[in-house]
Length: 125
Image 1 (cartoon, rainbow, N blue to C red):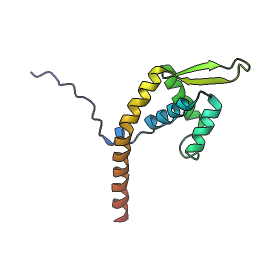
Image 2 (image 1 turned 60 degrees about the vertical axis):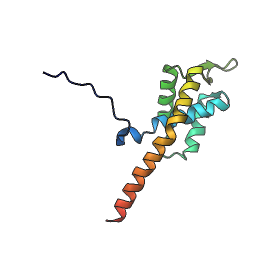
Image 3 (image 1 turned 30 degrees about the horizontal axis):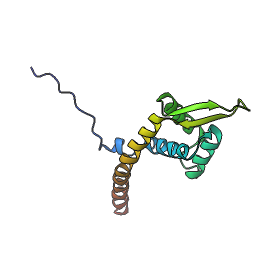
Image 4 (image 1 turned 135 degrees about the vertical axis):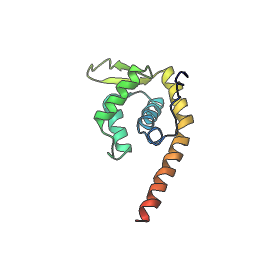
């Protein structure tokens, strides 16, 4: 009997290529590299970048929470107003940002190819 070989997940599957999460992580971390920002302003700024299309403050809050839990972002309360929370990118966040900046161009190119192929197919019908 042959033991089952464990397969590595395929990176080039359709479901792995077209994902918004890494793109949002990239944008969040890019904005925080410019300067630390408070949670509300950052969320509003990113929703504005996407013109509200498919991105809302609730989803961004979830992504930011994941980035905090992953050690990529640190939350710091404002000294004067405890209701304001500032977000700061960590060293691990900078490493993750670099990884994303290396990987995303290829993923975006593949996603554009896939969507272009779908668009051509649709025009045939």
